[in-house]
Image 1: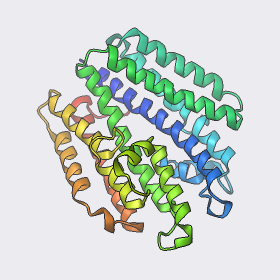
Image 2 (image 1 turned 180 degrees about the horizontal axis):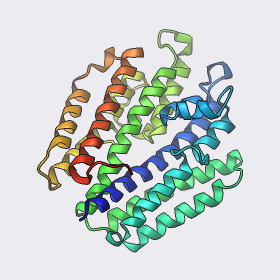
Image 3 (image 1 turned 90 degrees about the vertical axis):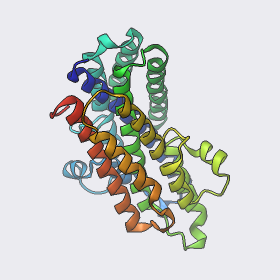
Length: 313
């Protein structure tokens, strides 16, 4: 398989996962706004920080980050390369370039999703219509992933899609923990504990983790337990450790003489396992999450250098 096609498949995996995660973030944040009193409401600005586009948003928007401004920026703003519109376009274009390696149904589903999103995002969405559009988009992304699993040969072409998907997923989990934890209320204020639990629940729901957390942890939702679950759990598909284990397995099977990416994954697994989470709060938590994101970026660079060669996507 040509390195160019491998790169297209890798980035398709990343972009499709990014679109699904963004849709879930927006819907969960809208629900959180209804659950918290106004004075404790974190607003919509945290979503800009989670996606890493604060500078771009600030440059084109003045004043407070309103729901209307943020949602438009994240969904349809053509000046935002990380918008839902641009993300789905890139997912489609990367898949189109490698469509001969895929089941025809996958291409048809991806093309239909892109066209439907273009139609919806070209107009004005009411809150109710937006919620339903994003809910259906999540299902459509999962349908594409399911069709790939059920009908595509489990060869190296499929491996590169999974590499992109799970690296993107791990990155999004660390971003959500980084920003959301910074917005959380101080735990020592007892009267605010019910709201603090609601906010941690929103972290779990942003990753579709709430039901599985309650099933396996069986304790009141608390910061340390949520961190431990979303970072270290080896059974939940959106935890950082689960993603790293998948990456480790995939990288060990790919051809290539340079094991730089595999070594980077192993080093990050050790960091996640060995950090004492009970003592990581406030600024130390932010610094820890920043370190994880840097190391995930280094894994991406190692993959690019080993199998794709240097260059932009």
